[in-house]
Length: 99
Image (cartoon, rainbow, N blue to C red):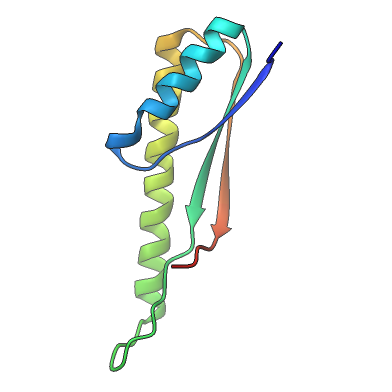
């Protein structure tokens, strides 16, 4: 039987279904639910004539952290509404993505 479920906490309101599905499945199976929020590094595209200052990069990092935290809040709310007793979440910082 499944006792552990891991869900990638999606960014954006249109993809909340993943959290709801994972929460309802965890309740049904009496499983432990873990949510993972990724805090992505800012994309730094190379463009002629554009310069990104450290302040701009730090601002983007802070925005990405805030977005990940919003996903965690949605996750915690869905878990509370579902009545799940066993829960944890993790935030992974410094994840870079390639276009």
